[in-house]
Every structure is written in structure tokens, then in C-alpha cells.
Image 1 (tube, rainbow, N blue to C red):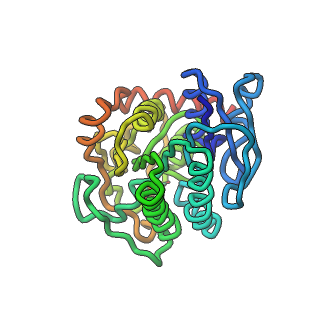
Image 2 (cartoon, rainbow, N blue to C red):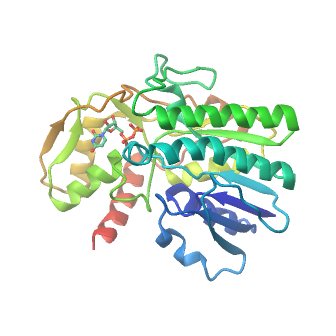
Amino acid sequence: MRTLITGGAGFIGSHLCERFLTEGHDVVCLDNFITGNPLNIQHLHGNPRFTFLRHNISNPVEIDGPIDNILHFASPASPVDYLRHPIPTLKVGSLGTHNTLGLAKAKNASFLLASTSEVYGDPEKHPQKEDYWGNVNPIGIRGVYDEAKRFAEAMTMAYHRSHGINTHIVRIFNTYGPRMRLDDGRVVPNLMGQALRGEPLTVYGDGGQTRSFCFVSDLVDGIFRLLHADFHEPVNLGNPNEVSILDFAKEILSLSGSKSQIDFKPLPQDDPKVRRPDITRARTLLGWEPKVDRHEGMKRTLEFFRGALG
Ligand code: UDP
């Protein structure tokens, strides 16, 4: 098996590279480092089954030899990153998805698209099931990511229906763990970094908005299972254990032993008020559910950030 992972030097991508190598696959990792980090894959370069290609997948790509699986994970993925790179975000979701699907067709490879809970926008249904169509502001600041991923899902289904490609779509809910970038702007690295540096924790709005955090090893396990399932419609993967952002900030203070204060800041535009996956489909189809409980995952992540801060 030879597996191509776009965005393979990113947070989730690099964990996928490791997992597929462990499963005995040859892995071709493609990244342009717009938000990925060479350090995430540094330890893999000595492995003869690992190849790295520096390339922007929004431009056409040719790859020699057979490819059995393509996992399209390249994209800025945190609100701060996609606000910083709005046009590359739109391009990688549209042109990048077209290019990777074209490659899947040429190589007769299975395909898996990294989609997102952002396709549900600021949801009016709670928890979110896969048959909910979402509530997205197309011209808001998050639209560049949300609409790119919605387009990517449409393109993936079209390649499945028109060309018979064996495609899969995972809708990834908030995921955290080692190798997140301390400066990616998301709530986990922001608040953990602040707690460890003894700075005030920035909680946006009143902190009453909710998220449900999945540890990265659980997510990667679900993705591996989904790639091998005979199922083509989207599947939510995430941890249904929901928490308000204010309570999450307090948990970080208590787990890190930090004496930091909480500093309330304005809520960004279109920030979803609630988010929790309904994972019935993943449970039934893949026999999957998250195993790492939030406090355990948070401790491991705090350890990683402690190391990263030196
Ligand atoms: N958030 C916060 N403080 C921060 C960063 C984020 O209160 O320093 C909030 C943000 O407003 C949102 C939630 O935490 O309600 C999750 O934000 P994140 O950027 O991690 O991703 P999202 O789930 O919004 O895509």
C-alpha cells in the first residue's frame, strides 16, 4: 500500500503519516509549510518507506508510481490561520481538492477528504448530525474555510458519482494534542500557552459558547477505519463530551497549577455558539468511539507545550 497525505506536515497530517507507516504503508507526505511545520516530520525522514514532497497542492501535481490511497488534509484550519490566508484557504479547498481527486482518478486510488464541523456553521441543530445542512454565512470571515470545505465535499461526491471513485468524507470536530502550533490562535494552544507562561487567559465573549474536544490519537484511529469502510457519505468524528469555553479555561488553570487570571475579550464574528458531534454514524459504521478522556488528553498536551516553551 502506498498512501499520499497532503498537509502531511501539519498537526493532524503528521500523526496520520506516523499511523500509516506503523500500519506498513509507504507514505508520501506532501506539504508547502504554509501552516505545517518541518519539525513535525523530522523524525520520519530516516524511514525508507517515507517520502516528502514540498508542493502546493492547489497547483497540479504529478507523482511517479502507483498510489493506493489519497488523504487530502492540506488546508489552513484554525480561524486565525484562515483569516491570515483567506485566498490560499479557498484555493486548497477547491483547486487542491480538484487536483487530488484527479490524481485519485488517474491512479485508481481511494480518496479521503478532511472536512470539518465548520460545514454546520453556527448550528441551529444540536448536537450536529450528518444530515443537517448547516447555517453558514458565505461572506463572513469564516466563509473562506466553511465554503471551501462545503465545495470540497460537493466535488468529492461528484467524483464518486460521476467517476466511481472510492471516496470518503470525514467531518472533523475540534481536535487537540501534541504538535498543535502554539501560535495557531485556537483555544487549546492559546489558553495552555498563556497558563504556562503565567499570562491572563483570553476567553472570548462570556465563555458560555461550547466545544467538544477530541484527542488526536482517537481522531486518527477513526480516520484509519473510515478509509477502509464501504461508505461514501460524510461521517462526523469528534468527542461528544461538550464543555463551555469558560469551564475549559478553569480546567486548564487547575491542571497546569497556573495562577493566571481570566481576561474576557470580544467574541469574534460568526463564532459558533455551540458545537457537539452526534457520532451515532461512526459508532455504528466503524465501531469507533473516543477513548482518551479530556483531562488525560489535556495533561499530555500541556506536557507537549511545556516542552515546546522550553
Ligand atoms: N476562544 C477563546 N479564547 C481564545 C481562542 C478561542 O475564548 O484565546 C474561543 C473561540 O471564541 C471559540 C472557541 O474558543 O468560541 C474555540 O475556538 P477555536 O479558535 O479553537 O476554534 P473554533 O472551534 O471556533 O473553530
